[in-house]
Image (cartoon, rainbow, N blue to C red; front, top):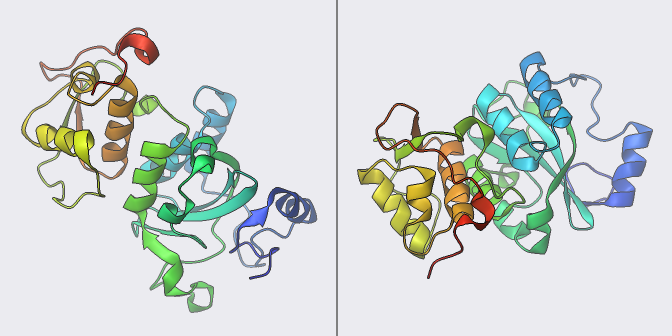
Length: 245
């Protein structure tokens, strides 16, 4: 596939040339701006360096239920990903599992635009891509939450909170093994704070935060600030608890 096409992985230099030339997603009939509410959320994230990361950006799209084309810096390449929260899909030249590796831990958002493609079933048939380039959104959310650069809880679920799986959470959540699978099982039957989950066998504050982020973004987590189990986060969470074995 041509390196200058937005449906391929680009080199950083090719991406920058295309952006300067104004030929990233193309299409004269494509909106030039994202929806106002999503744009406001993204601008707020951009103004707060502590929260301007790829997971928060994807979370904003999910929260607003608005599609967006995200250009993600992955190592020396640019990975274009279009998220469709309403259809619970994402479009990409490669599935998230194929992008696993060192570049995932340093993912960075280079830009966000209105989608250049439409989801399957849309009335604008000419803008629907090949079916082999659409994937379940849960796979992307799970991968970025567990392996992306963000190691802390998402802002919207942090604080004095108790967590539990919602009763309708699917039994076949994206695959997790060992301690993570055990933690998911416990959250089906009991509510727990971040401090509690971090103390379970094989977990740490970081691993617990990543798991809770993944469950929340996939709609499987109930968040309560009034439950008796709600407790404040560890003060120095990065060093409070090292990984248990």
